[in-house]
Image 1 (cartoon, rainbow, N blue to C red):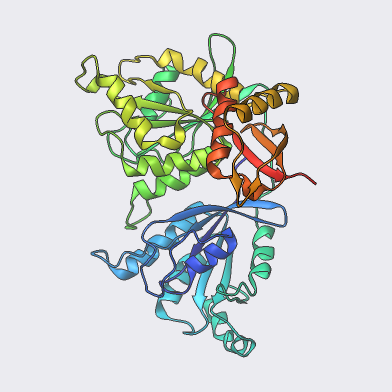
Image 2: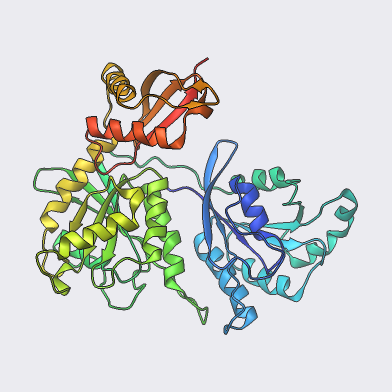
Amino acid sequence: MTKPTIAIVGRPNVGKSTLFNRIAGDRISIVEDEPGVTRDRIYATGEWLGHEFSIIDTGGIDLGDEPFMSQIKEQAQIAMDEADVILFVTSGREHVTDADEAVAHMLYRSNKPVILVVNKVDNPEMRNDIYDFYALGLGDPYPVSGAHGVGMGDVLDKAIQYFPEEKEEEEEGVIKFSLIGRPNVGKSSLINAILGEDRVIVSNIAGTTRDAIDTSFVDEEGQKFVMIDTAGMRKRGKVYENTEKYSVMRSMKAIDRSDVVLMVLNAEEGIREYDKRIAGFAHEAGKGMIIVVNKWDAIEKDNHTMKEFEEDIRKEFQYLSYAPIIFVSAKTKQRLNQLPALIEKVSMNQNLRVPSALLNDVIMDAIAINPTPTDKGRRLKIFYCTQVAVKPPTFIVFVNDEELMHFSYTRFLENQIRAAFDFEGTPIRVIPRRRT
């Protein structure tokens, strides 16, 4: 199920990143009192009153060659096209500016709900100075202080009123998977090759795919699949379009709806920093993962090429050590017939449940191999372990003090669980909890 999306827009230096961090509950965006500090769009998940949502910090106002005002319009355009709710952030210290008015003119023609947020209202006396913002024509202004968290509850209460109704689309036995990756790694070509027909327009121009496309098919064994394509942005007028940045948002929405995610790499171009960034979203979301190296037919190979490429992947994607790697070609259909079975296997592993008795035997054997650590004379004691969830498989380890469970020992227990059970293709989570 796709989470609703809140986008934060506004001119530079009004505190968008501070609000983003406040809502996300962490210092994810870099916050400095200088315009244009947020260079890349940042994404996170937030929660308010039981409602989960995606949140986008549309900073990244690049004060380079592009005209200043066109960059502001670019940010507003992202929000209008992609968000369910828009938080338009202004500054209570500077009142209404020409740039605020320019963004407002775009937003109130967008047919999207817009909440006018007046930030940096740090004391009650300043609330009397927010009435100028009614001139923007976007309804009641909400005075907040992102730095202190004042007024954020009122803003989020209003935002969740605009969230679309949740619709359950689950069909029993259907595996949903998506293909993510940089523009022009061959995602659309792979989809066509898997389906055996041209259902998606294929082009060498990066970012050709504009609309989200779901395609259902059944493999030879009768397993039902839904394939989710990740689309780019629609280009309107003369708005500058950086498809690589925009594709992150589309990919996150596809990841959200998927059981298994295929991370597509381009064999000709190798691994880029962007690949690691976008794969990290799927890993953190706890999705099943398969690394697909496309265009394998297009490079010169010897007996060591595949092994060396795989070693590079393992080095660059250390956190995806559990993900199987498959080398394919959409053009020649090399190994594509192996993908459905691999996706089905990873989905099964995502849903694998381990009996508690068997699990605790593995944990006790692990402690015998590597005794629990001590800290300042206190030893970690592990009493019991149980699996509490699937997709991804999640294990609670009851201990005497969770602070004694060092990250390295948690990783050791995870590796022992993986060695005992087949969790290929899925992250697993081991969470220490104090026994009460």
